[in-house]
Image (tube, rainbow, N blue to C red; front, side, top):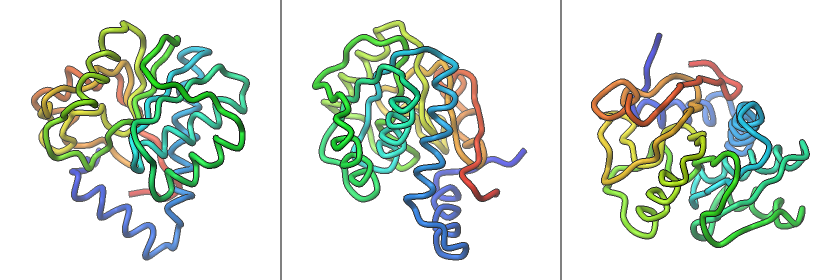
Length: 197
């Protein structure tokens, strides 16, 4: 099995977009749909906690698919989304999706806060939100990598989501099997996003 470091994963994303001309919005759609498919096996109500970047965008796509399948969904957005994430945020606003302002109860939490790009220690308000999610005792589905885990080294950057399952794309990340990775990733599920590695 092949594994990806943070840098290799970023290189792959660029290759897919530049060589194969697959728009980043389609990659996000494929990723988010995969997340929703797995999430629906875990429960019927969801709190989707989204960061501002692409990982958050994957979460917003997942939220839309869950809503379309009749699931109860609350979305906690941590800041103003940008790029493709903003596009998906605008779609959800038009759908009148339910946005909340704090971590609250649901059968399953979807972690879409940070992706593979995280390289510095997690600070407030994110630290407190991650700790609150961990304290709920609910199943957590992490998107691509548990927020707070370095995807290459497997070290926790201050604090990290303790996931029940991690759905990652293209290939597992090196950090899942090093240092703290095995403690926080839970079951690792690999999904493709339309192009193989």
